[in-house]
Image 1 (cartoon, rainbow, N blue to C red):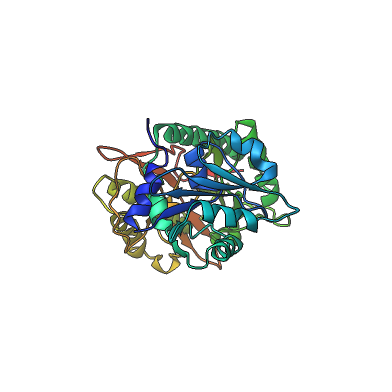
Image 2 (image 1 turned 90 degrees about the horizontal axis):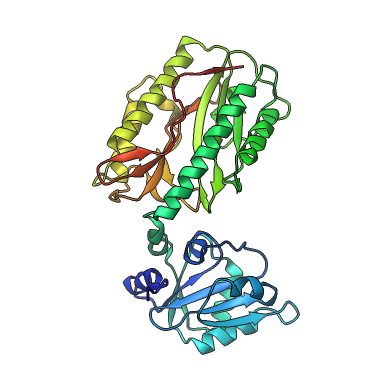
Length: 364
């Protein structure tokens, strides 16, 4: 029988650790096939290099936790007594000298509870080793991602058809949200970004209620559906009715960079290679001073995960890895343009999971 914990045991062995500790999040949901949300009540699963795992579970979550088919010892706790006794019991049941934790999601009070229960315990950030388990997407994850992308692209098509001069950014965002759920999104991959004119030059802008789009504006829409536990992430930049020749040139420069990134994406290439091919196009243009970020990031159960597509990251790309290619150019006194696709590395090259038209498009 397959040991579903084996990838985490391997990660622990490779890092010379006695165990891996997981909290609710992307790694937890991939392991158990369902999601638990982080809140003020700690829930932790400890996976040793050998033997049965153990878990600390709030008593009120026991019913839900039992549905996971967890086959180790469970130490539950109630609000009235607090969680520290459960940590004390687990560390007594499962004596450990060292554990690896998810450095980006483990919270300080959980760290402190482990240290209080076992003062000599070495707690090490094993984020990279744990995240590597999710580098290669399963067939189920890829099917879910294709579904999330399809939902997103249908929602975007319906939304831009509804855009009219005079609408506020917030109104356009509301239309987008309605379309996402109408087409089957379970949730947002992240809070949608709808930004026009100078606001589009903020890579992580917030939509405004008091700005109404006008002819000639850029309109940047960055969003994604979550479906089947995984994320889509797509950005397209449009122009309202018309644009100047210079803005069309900026757009086409970003598009050429996006296409260069696609061309460089293949098994055996590195994340560095893809970023270098993409960013070199922007750097060699008249707009090199407008570059503000790397080319992309891994995509899966988290909206940002490994591999990060940036110069200096020499991680080799392998079949099953998914990441974004999203070059952009931004002038805080003018506009921002970003074009983002979700790309899967295949045995022979790469496949763009996003297929929404990238040609210069006018709306409104």
